[in-house]
Length: 593
Image (cartoon, rainbow, N blue to C red; front, side, top):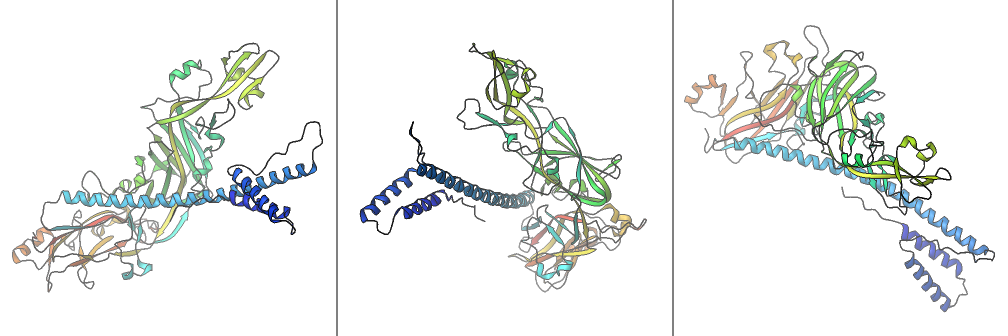
């Protein structure tokens, strides 16, 4: 998608108007000299009005009556100028929409590139820790569709790849946005909502209007923006302060709003969203907004749900509700510790740092979010200041806002007379301060339903040398409710490899341990020798006898969920296992182990 180009129509419309007027002035009997003279006049006027309005004031001569023709021409040109400007405003509005859509598209494209780079970094991390010669890693992080082969799986059986979150789930059969019709029940914190006190320098012919409050154009203080599903509306919560030196100069007048240390302070806000009624929910998406120049982070301290607005429980454990997760927009596809650690903690999924949480389904009417901002950034802040002086004096004295008559408080910036003796100057003074800010574009509270079984089949991974051994690493999450029968705990996500697209051989990820006597092998060997086969049981290894060493391999993942729990028969259609990453470790023929 190419960036839209703004094409102004002002000059074109001015030219059309001047030519139209020229046609009116010229009659069919006009001489060549008259035509040339008018053409020169029109060309000169067109050049002179570039960047200016068409209107040329025809002033009345003092002491004489105005000419009707001049009055008519003045009004006609002003009308044409206003028409051109309104047309241009419509054009600009259209381009603003196009630019917003373009910027959103570019943001998604860049994030996709970042996710791809993230995957490459994790690949490199694995390779730096690998000392075995002739080893190849084939890794998938589900941030795109490059490695899936949809032709081998019918749509109704196909697992769903969530590229933004970077995970694989069961096929989604239904999606309900529970945020629709909801309302923000409460907002509490140690700051204020909006962009108040933020200032910007503006061009002005007045000595008193050099700065303007951002909030006069963009308030961002409406809580409805949190749940309206509109990406171009934003809610901000802030804590702002200005230097002590400015406060002293202004005698600490009217600076009660200024709070927070520049470093080492914390802005916190609690937001409670109320659904129309108790609804089943299992997925939450919080889309942050970061103001220009801000640190670009926000911390989610906790998320809790409640049926009655009194007793709350955490997303993953009833009494353990603290998350302390910093939100960014890329999947955490690699970790400082082991890349594939076998953790099944849903609170630590790689997409939770993106503002996305998949959790055990539950009935809820109230969802409470506690957000924090520990980092401030430099910001230009404005303070309305009032000064008073006697009319016969040249110096003003700073006074409190409460000392100013109410009619002056609401007046525009400038000098205002209050009586025959005194006048008051109202100005907006700007100073560099600091701001803690929490911004949110949208909160989506979802209810997803999933199929009972789905499968994923990769494209064939091609190698130059023959394959001797295959091992599998995987990051997966299986809901605790699935594990009522320990003997089935490894069966909700099953992995298979194939070398010929016909025979499939089940393989266990390296982190899994046997839970029954049918535990699949962790190592698949091809045409191994007898001494290795003797150790196969201890290593959970299986030897495959093939005609020749294969040079391609596919991976198939079969995902399942129970229909309902065994003990209390709770339906589980709102649950799904997850696969975050997998990697096939392949030892090839020449220097195989």
